[in-house]
Length: 48
Image (cartoon, rainbow, N blue to C red; front, top):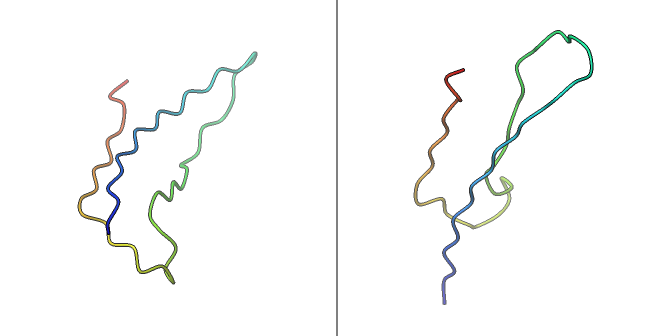
């Protein structure tokens, strides 16, 4: 038996004062020791 799942994630930040922005690392894959297969993956950046 297999399970297919779709994940949509949006991160949005608001601050009460100016901040210095730095890159973030986002990990949305199964752990390396897992036997779970990723059928497809798409990552997009908001075009502010």
